Length: 126
Image (tube, rainbow, N blue to C red; front, side):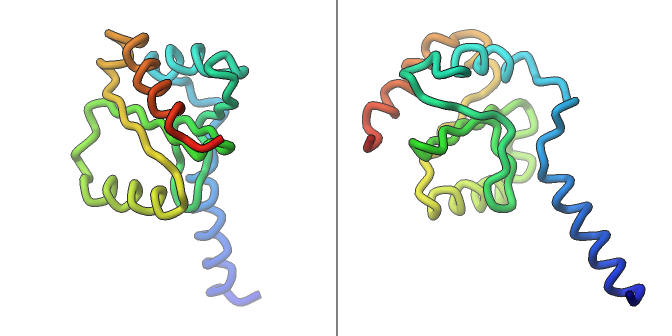
């Protein structure tokens, strides 16, 4: 195998590894709070998964059956607004609805966040 091919394989593995959820990575307080409410079909009998790769992106929470993505944004949002817009555009092109919540919204008013999710779910085709 040539060095070029070996280097390309190594770079591909590095990219794929960076997109794979790290099971050892500790969830943020925000993610953990919302996850406890959504996991195990506890919310509207919907199956949610967290830290899932979709295309080239890693989403915080997703219900694949309902094509609903929930993103939790801390202080880093806006640092790469163009990338965030491209990500949302790609997800929407794939048929996903994207809901974004600031960490302080979830931590300060988790029931309000759940009501917003519930309203959106009621609009989705089942």
